[in-house]
Image (cartoon, rainbow, N blue to C red; front, side, top):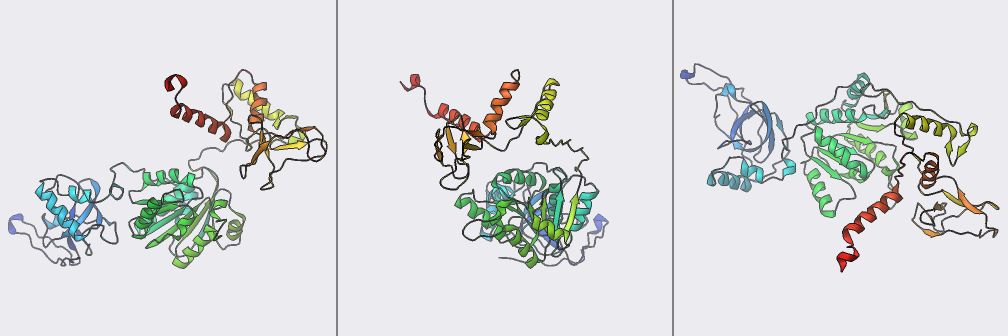
Length: 474
């Protein structure tokens, strides 16, 4: 039950203090349980009533702490001139009902402990401050600052934030969200993949003390329900999730951010087929709030909307901290001799770096030995019988495997089309590249890292843990 405190007018300090202090007539005395060696709530002032059970951020000495409102007071327990104001009201409704507040008050007095302990015990750790130091906001360059000023405008404004890798798009997101939170509003951030969620959440947690909720399909039903309720009940300042999170109810939503907006995983491909990016744009339009679409390689439709003027087009053309861009050399394969996809120029540059004591990383986006198994006589290529994709030849497994559906079959040594036996591997995958490099650079260690080798090593590790050796078994 909410008991609105009376407004405080002029207060006169006793003559012994030789002070006369004026408290504005529109302020309220609010009692707050704050962490520390206190035997009762401390009194703060605020310009409007605050219901008991709501969290507030208040000054305590040189620190800012989160406390819980326990009620109101007719008078302050300090001189009115020294009364400190509540800095931020963190909740729109009480987290603790009246009966829990009364029980917590009784516990602190009955067990003669710090007054705030029972109140803090009544709340999960996730909604209380961790005490760890937050990262400070980074200094923005001119392009980032100009982008931040644009995306911080109120009203419906869609923006394409196009920036090269390392240009500081995420820092613009973070400071735009910080501006949104300071206005008492909430933010929704969509990321394309579940795998990106932990690193995104970690960076947000290092920056913000506010409650952050994560929503994606890898959560259990219980976890997802709890996260959804936290967001829906107004207890989360920031929601981070994959495409379905766009439908999360959020009171007082003030900003939507779509990271890597070009990513195909924002499209739902079955049942109700939708594009989460477009749904987000519609939601922002309905709520009349800004929305940021960030990408280093924007989708064609978003880029067209930016070029045509329908979206604001914000460009970040340089690295955030002024770092130099890497040197990129394009090799014309028509003018190079090559060995299973490795050009003469590439091998020369690799040898140079190895002689200088450096390491070399070669990226090839094809696992297996070769992407095709084909007949040299008639051109037949082994295809998957289920999805029509070419089968990839895996030499180590002596099998042709479909990388789309997982179908595998034995390697054919006679062409089913012309019955010749001139079948061979065409193209180069990571297995073949490893084989070629091992023959060319015999004096350096070469490590292949792809899904096949990682899965094999993992299975060996698990087997060592789960399956006892013969001696132990006997």
